[in-house]
Image 1 (cartoon, one colour):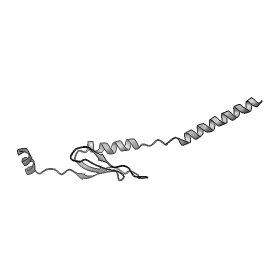
Image 2 (tube, helix red, strand yellow; image 1 turned 90 degrees about the horizontal axis):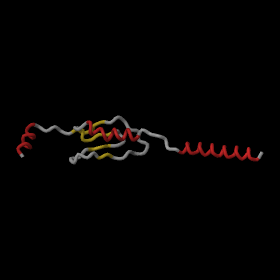
Image 3 (cartoon, one colour; image 1 turned 90 degrees about the vertical axis):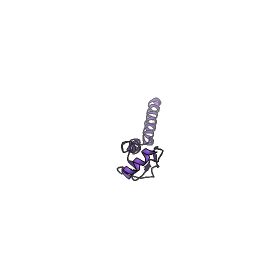
Image 4 (cartoon, rainbow, N blue to C red; image 1 turned 180 degrees about the horizontal axis):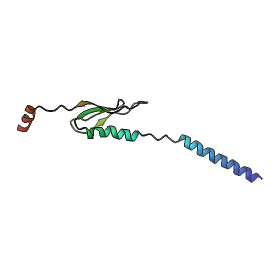
Amino acid sequence: MMRAGLKATIALLVAALALSASAQAPPSTPAPAEEASLHNFGDSNKACQEWTDSCRSCTRPESGDVLCSNIGIACQPKPILCVKRAEEKKPQEQKAEEKK
């Protein structure tokens, strides 16, 4: 008779451990997809020099490497906006560069 009680106790302990492990698992978030889209925004918008999602900001300096800030605590990203575009060169400036 003691065996049945021991088996029931073990079963309850296993169930309790399984529930606590699932409660401690971190929630899956779509952050990597959002981060990728923020970093890839500059690839699809070559004329954009600075862009933001209101949480992070990215810039493309002369070197061409994209630099992005970190996201703040509890910040809710918004749609990505270009805040600074590369200025188009005037025809006179283009000719001066061609002569160099």
